[in-house]
Length: 119
Image (tube, rainbow, N blue to C red; front, side):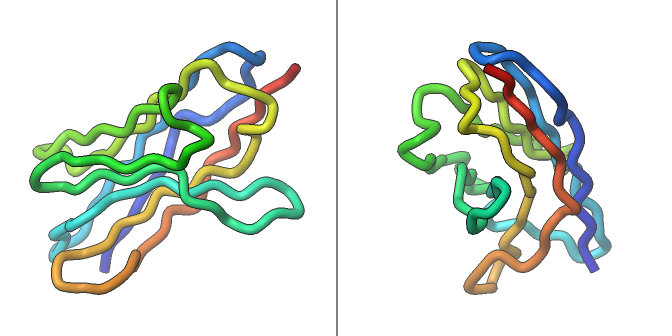
C-alpha cells in the first residue's frame, strides 16, 4: 500500500507564490512517475505536471509552463510543486499522484490540498 500526503496549500494573492509538497510512503514504493493534478469547482480534474523519478525529466500543462516547477527529493520520497506568478484561475484542489514502476497509469492519489488565488 502507498500513501501520499500533500501539504503547502493556502491562500495567496495573484502574482504570489506557493510551494506544495507530497510525501510518499509504503513498503513497496517504487515510483516511476510522480505528478500533480488539480480540480477546480465544477470542472474535471486536469493534469498539471509530472516528473520521472529516475531521470528527472518533466512535463507540464501549457497553462502552467514557465510558472510552475516540479521537482523531487529521491531519498525523502517527496515531490514538490513550486508555483510562481499565480493567477486566480489556478485556484483548485491540487492532488499528488504516483505511477508505480511496471504499471500503466497513475495508481495512488493523495487527499488533496486547497490552493486559492485571490485577485
